[in-house]
Image (cartoon, rainbow, N blue to C red; front, side, top):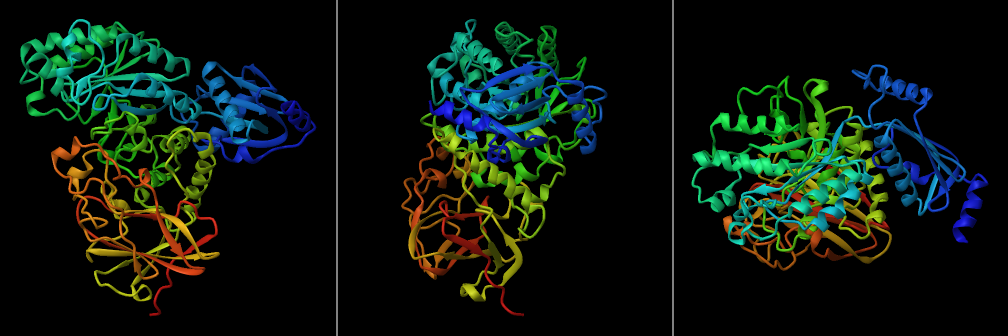
Length: 630
């Protein structure tokens, strides 16, 4: 009865425009109209694109400079969605565009609490491949956990799931020819593996959602457990050639190249004892090509010689990689390795980094973000709680669907000064992402508002009063700040010569109250972070001398559950409270009016960063410290 009443009101012409401004990825054209569609009540009609629809797409692509190579056609996946009084009309040439239109309609209804506002949307993907990688070789994830993530990818118009299914820690696909690969003694960390039925069922389920699975068998590197299973010391022992041939034959026999057209053969990070003769690699590629599959390999990696056609490359080392003019490629450079980043760090690359930024347009296939949880995860769910998987899906959906007008690697780690007109792009993307948090209430979604913060940076090793610190001109508006970035020095805020920086911010509170505050000064990766950087010390924020002050009073760190962990052994000890978003925030007392928040951040170790923000900022405003008079 309630739904019927809502429908009657909306059919009368009441327009609800809010959700239209919150869609992710953002559609190319979105016009508000009167009327609305109520989930479970309104009708959905599906038809083909009209000539007027195609002309509208071509015209808009031409205006955006995206029309090269399109000719008289429109991109695969283009669609038109018109929502009116009780009816949603979808127009698309084929199932792909219709799926994306339905995803948009579902999202509109979800954001509108069951009501999709009247609108006309014209949209298409700028990049053909838009994906996520999970490494289940190192840390096995049950099929149910993987299956639960696929509809979320589909809702955000991703169409590729890279399944990294083998690594040093195990060959996780059942082999009936070589069952010793799944023997518990030949698997590290977990004896979990995927049966051949599991493998086929997950691929079929993904296909039903419009997602192509890219299975990856990482060879000849990353093969410790493989070698253990066969008693091998080196990968160039003659019998390896036939074993791998048999395994690829077996895996290919489980796949239909019409559903799974690509197979990934790894080839990266091959150590000396893992190198194989080049003709072996060529033979394995030719075997799969003859069965109708296209072969993908990492770049850089061990290259097979004398191929009949180029491999598809997956690049992982950033913009310094030289793109081959002959090889199609997709982009998963360090900016998309979310196991290395803090959740708030995602906003800058998602806003300003252009996927597939170089090379011939015909060879730029798309982008994929990767979840390499290299450290041991005792519970498979830790892969989803210790890494910002679901915020990354929402944030990167926009960049991967529409691309970016410019490739601002100078803004990889740090957002622009909020007075820079470019800052509005990040604030707008963040606004949309935060509107999606309620849609993920049952999932870990560690992302909070940060673009309203206003820090200044002072470079000095001296301990000076807040007002006397040599505050710089630039204002920094983010919750995680990198004076120097660990991957991309183009985005550094300082040359680091002072050896120490201070971050200061004035927090004005509407009344005296106790509030939550997140703070962290280690930013450990989930990939050997404690091995790469200094260990936590009980009673200190970090071993580098970081300090946190509120109104001149030093705020102590939490009591660490695992201080002192470092070296290789730390990789096999699961993270517990090291990532700031999995531990409770601090509780701090603010006075009414002005409060001074101050961070001392000496330089040392791999990551030089500070995370400090209020997750519930209601009643708070933020301003940079006043600069001393000259």
